[in-house]
Image (cartoon, rainbow, N blue to C red):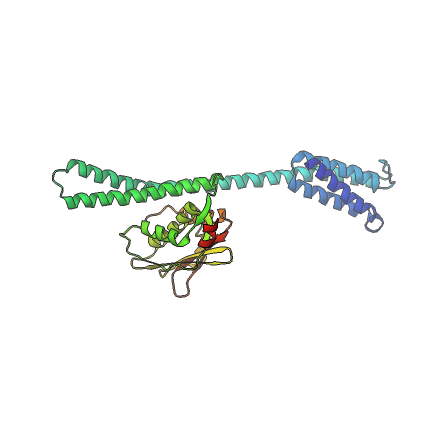
Length: 347
């Protein structure tokens, strides 16, 4: 295909020049053909470029250098000019290809460096996020084993609660890693089914740790239809947004969740009255492993990137903005088939 395109481009330019040769002259045509070779060199591999360079030199000699329609050249100036054209076309092809190869090599090196940086960020994050709950669980279990006879029922209940919270935290990190793996591998398949969004949001709120010092408000929309979505993915999206607000806002912050719809588009907002995002950081919020500078320890920086991936898997979009009165606001819009409960009963 590269050979065909290269040859075709040279012929098209030569044909256009042939009908205007009387106005522009064969020396200008040489520059136009060289430009064509340069364009081909920026796009294709070295061999098709060399073919284009040689072909353009032959065409220029045969159709444009006097006498026309012959490879014979009358004067020494045109002979020298033709030889220089041939050499310049080949050198141009090779150098352009080498420059492009060097750029690709530099780009690959930069991508590797970025990958290593992300890998180190992930390791540093997971070394804390996974080690901390595991250490907590192991420590609490050892305490229960070694002091079973001396611990009061209240102490045992407290240790069990510690194990429970650490297990939830550990499970959340593992789920985030698995979700990101599914997104990047392209193996994510939606399991579409009818969903009551009000019940879904209530279910997510009930799973939030009771020890949270944040206030969560949700006012169900009574006239909200059922939507055909992947319930599991949407549940994790809402959970990640709520957890993100809990993680990065001060204690006592109010988190407000609203759900609505316009035609066949589901709209869910999760907002808070915390400190919000710095304006220049908003565009980075959904990047993998990204965390706001100077935030408290905790979190792997995967939550919001998973939110974006799961929403886009539904052909939807997620937007982040700051509230006018302070705090952050995440808005999710997902196009989905809708139906009211009476219609579902008839189905």
